[in-house]
Length: 346
Image 1: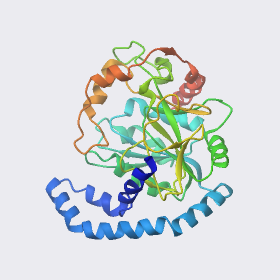
Image 2: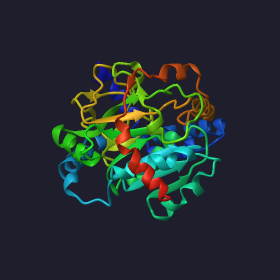
Image 3: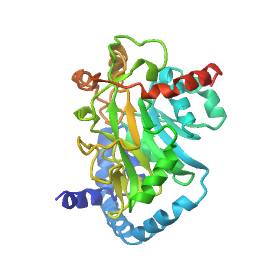
Image 4: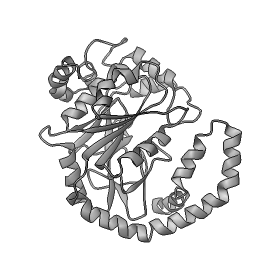
């Protein structure tokens, strides 16, 4: 039944992504609707043609990509696309964490920050570590992800689409993210993306922002079976996905043959995976959703980046995601090296 539902959903997403996101940039809602109506016949024809192409010739090219992509040389083995708004207090810790893990390129889209963000990371931009783009407008997360995908598609072997409060962590610290990705792409057939569940970290009782690193101050998380861990992020082959259209957690693959797979081998059909299907075999996404109570209030005031209305979150979400049942200090492994790098003005 799920596959029957996915067929029309997949067909709908076969519209011309470039045209779709260009129309989305129109801030005037009435003008945007008028253009959708005016161009809908063109988009429908384009969708039919794309549908036919991606599920015939596209399957052939996808099979070739799956067979050959690990043998090729890329400018970057692994890149990260991120959208930010007023993340200056956290960005360098996040960058240095991933640099320790071997990430060489970050594609950062700044959604109208007003906290001196660009100047704060100027050294990273000047050295080519960060590809910085200012991106205006409300509810533009999917648009930013689409632009990021276009930037990294040829240059990166693998890519993740992550937030600044999400830390993708190898369970075995001796393994790299790339080696783990290689392992799963060799293990499972027709995989376009590897899905990794959240592990939600709570406030650890902090009412206001404490001094020090995020990964030092928040050492309590939810149990693996809690519903707050249901969301997935993960790793994609950027040549096998079309982008993100209905959720920032679940990529649209290029055809029916391709799939998103959990570490336990189960196919994923949406952005949520509940216990006991969630899997943390080799990777997990440590998600510092709330941090302190005051920081969470500031976050909620910024609104939801994936929704055009940019609605502010309800405070009830804090109570749902403020999970502190399990003490977990696994991220402290990286703390000293991050602080060393930050003290060296990087």
